[in-house]
Length: 239
Length: 371
Ligand code: HEM
Ligand code: HEM
Ligand code: SF4
Ligand code: SF4
Image 1 (cartoon, rainbow over the protein chains, first blue to last red):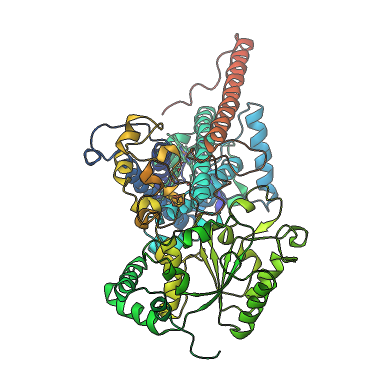
Image 2: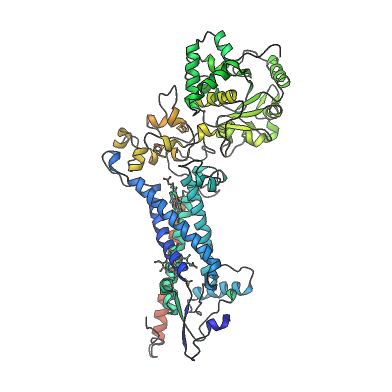
């Protein structure tokens, strides 16, 4: 069954098209992309508010607005993550393809193969799901780091409403990290992790899109990836 | 004991405090505890009738600023009120007795009120080398603390030293000083942090225990919620400037003169739980932020290690990294950029070299493009 999914069209045609990213995956990707960008920008502003409005305080709400935006996109990111977690289970196999299968030899082989391919500037074979390295970076830099930001952010957020809902849910994180000050510092430090992720992410997505010419970038918009007979590197761990 | 232990009110009368002053004190302290005015009679009744709680007050490695703060408890003109509110049976700094007599008193209270006395601890215990860095009468404070806590009803950890460790426990902590919670187990511990804690907070905690015969409700880190439930930042009178985005940028700028928010000067108000912005200090005269100085977070764990005080974020607390989050982040970003750049450059160079060597051959694979 899994095989038929990969086989080029039965007609004997050399090219095929496959629906890989279902709507929730795409929606969550773009909500994440926008939210993370906004969270990073507003977060850095909160940490160093450089605008200095003149006049009386009642006339302005600059810092207040930056924090409001930060919280708004914070909530968006949370809902997007929840949607993506649900879709990890409910979605198709590609929705699970990024998970690092560290216990499978074929996964390690792909890490190696894909790594060498990038280093030697070679063109490898097309993956329909995520390749092993891509999946690994999404897991570390987006899932782990993302949940850390969301949870630590919510813990800081809970401080303005002691005893409230978020305090009960995640307030325990504050003493765990040695106090509110230290937790903020880690929240701030972790923010840079996204920059470290996004730079190569954008580069590699553009690079692979050009190398494979398989509609990689548009696949995150429309959901389809294209492929050629004998050009598939089957994501063996997902079947 | 011989007869009924006298109540606080009995003692105050003996000291010549009039009823009016007494009632005023009860009202103030009720408000300070965050209770409704209908609770005033309950507080008055407790003061009048309940025998005072016997208290042993120990001093470990410390600077005595908590005692200093305590004896300046503002409200009652007669500072007696505070000193007599509880039965401060043993306090090696404040009591009249000296020498062996003192130790005798401590032992006696421990026996007579077994399980009934409160142990108030100011300062903390060095634990390295058997606790030799703080000894009283030839005994290590560590042992005295453990011994006295064993039969106490509860332990009150006064100040940041006893609650969190404070300066003695700051890196590199050569004497291994540890807060009460790390030394005493199996006893209720009430942490009353601050360097020092506000006098009204100290009396408030004691009044609560006396009035309701129970320990106040504590938060996650063992602090009484009624005094440490909110951040300085949430009750700060400069908060409107924070929300507006108006910040002091240097000690003598226009913003400083106008009383703008001290956030950019390193104010720890957004991460400090204390009552300074409500009670203020010295009889409600002012508090640091009121005088144009940022909060240094004296009631928070590790506040000495979270310096410099006039900087918003400190260096990352990882050994070997002496940089702020932004320095670390920018360095990593640049390194990533260099890596990606190097890949791009080698890719372009390689493609150029390839197309050069294949100059004569027809260009390959152009027809796939149909997007
Ligand atoms: C304009 C900017 C962006 C573009 C064009 C883009 C494009 C893509 C593409 C084409 C994929 C699929 C790659 C594959 O097949 O392996 C992908 C996956 C992914 N991208 Fe982006 N991306 C962008 C920004 C971001 C940002 C800012 C983030 C988050 C910080 C992000 C996080 C992810 C994640 C987590 C996945 C995996 C998706 C999943 O399995 O749910 N992307 N991106
Ligand atoms: C990609 C995700 C995020 C990034 C990059 C990010 C970044 C930042 C940064 C750089 C700061 C400034 C820290 C400082 O210097 O004090 C900050 C503060 C904060 N963030 Fe986030 N954040 C993210 C997600 C969240 C989320 C999901 C929440 C939850 C609502 C949140 C809540 C907060 C809060 C409450 C503050 C403190 C604001 C204040 O005290 O005024 N953050 N964030
Ligand atoms: S001065 Fe400090 S506590 Fe007051 S609003 Fe500004 S940051 Fe908050
Ligand atoms: S304002 Fe901050 S530093 Fe000052 S006494 Fe209060 S908690 Fe301590």
